Length: 215
Image 1 (cartoon, one colour):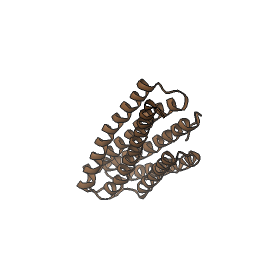
Image 2 (image 1 turned 45 degrees about the vertical axis):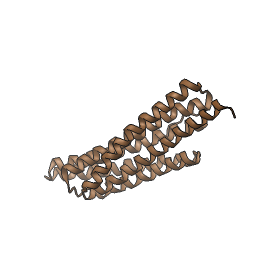
Image 3 (image 1 turned 60 degrees about the vertical axis):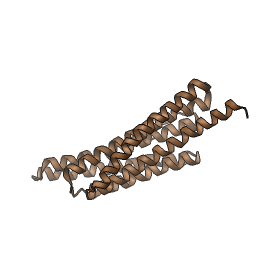
Image 4 (image 1 turned 30 degrees about the vertical axis):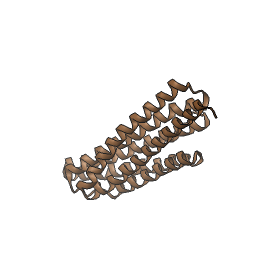
């Protein structure tokens, strides 16, 4: 292998390593929100904020790494799909960390929220989706990614349940602001599920060259 090829492989591996870390950060941020939703903790709150800041920096590193690969090595076919897809995947992971940060701030405003039980179920299913993505990236296999669609449908149903429960409570005279905060938290989890499906679709495109839509 010539020197140029070694540097190319090194850059490819560095980008993949960074995106796997983005995957880990997003999973950690969503996992931490469960503790915040059920019982506010200043330590967990700061952890989510730190993760979001790290994801911003690492996402830029991925973008710069992919741009260097493109500019210096002019990749084609599969390698070109890799660089383009990794930028998009990393950016989507960063968006999930942003949503976790929003949940953290809503949790801090309320301190003790007493959320509907289905919010916690949404969070756990979302973590399961992120674990599927992480495994796919590590093992470079895509077959299990289609399971994301069914899990996302379950999250959507749970969101509808939370929405209906909170709406009924508000009609009965329960405080509007706390219920609205909980509704936003559920919405952010539901949106993160949609983003996770987009990442799965992008991984399939990166590996197979096929444009699919997981939903």
